[in-house]
Length: 300
Image 1 (cartoon, rainbow, N blue to C red):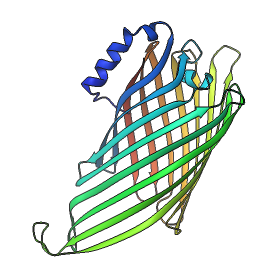
Image 2 (image 1 turned 45 degrees about the vertical axis):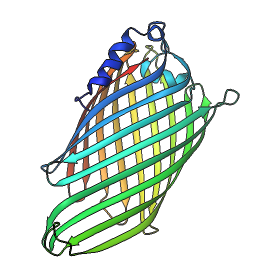
Image 3 (image 1 turned 120 degrees about the vertical axis):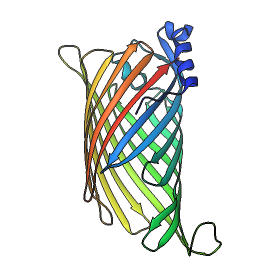
Image 4 (image 1 turned 90 degrees about the vertical axis):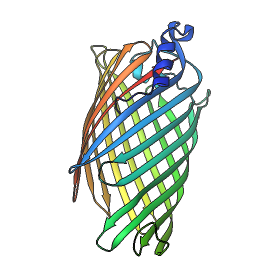
C-alpha cells in the first residue's frame, strides 16, 4: 500500500491524535489509505486503496503487540474497502469494493461473518491485430465465514464464496465512433473455499511471533480449478514494530501458475497511528511482477 493519502484521510488521522477515546488507550474505529505500484515487465500499474473498520466493542490498545490488539480482544467488526487500479499501457481501469461484518460470540468465541465483493474492470480502445476492441468484466460475489478461537492466541476459520461474472468484448469493424461492431459475451459462476489457521506465540524475550496459513480452492465456470497456499509470519520485537515475511503459490489448470514472496514492515509511530510498507515479488509462467506499497492508518 502506498503514499498518495487523501486530505480528508489525513484530517481524520490528525483528529484521532486529539480524540479522548484514543488518549484513553482504547479505540473503536480504524481508517486508512494506501498506494500500490506494480511493474509487470515494463507495464506499470498504480492502485489507490482506502478503507476502514468499526469494532463492535472498544479495543484496549495496551495489549501487545499493537497490530494484533483487535485479534487478542476477540472483537467483531464492520469493514469497508475500495480499490482503484490503472496502468500506463492502455486504458485499463479496475474498481473493487468490499463490505463485511464479523461477530465473535462471548460464550464460546465462535467467529461468524458475511460479506460482499464487487469488481468491475475494463479496457477501452485496445488495439489488436484484428482491430480495436473494448473489453469489460464484472464480478459480484457473496461470502460467509465460520470459525472459532481455539485458544486465546489461535483460531481457525472457513470462508465460502459464491459469485457470478459477466465478460464482454466489442470488436469494432472500423472505429469506436462508428456503429458497426460484433459482440462476444460470456457468463460464468465462481465458487471458492478458503481455510485459514492463525497462531500468535510469545517468545522467551517477551517478543511475539505470528503464524498464518491459508489454503484456497477456486472453481471458475466449472472449467478452471485454481488451488493456492499462502504462509505469513510476523515477528513483533516490540509492541510498536512488526516485521513480516510471506510465501505463496497458486496452481491453475487453465492459466499461469504463480509463486510469490514478500517482506513487510509495520510501525506504530504513536499508540494510534501506524505506517507500513510492503515489497513483493510474483513469478508467473510468462511474466514477473514487482510490487511496492506504502500506507498509513489511524485508530480513533
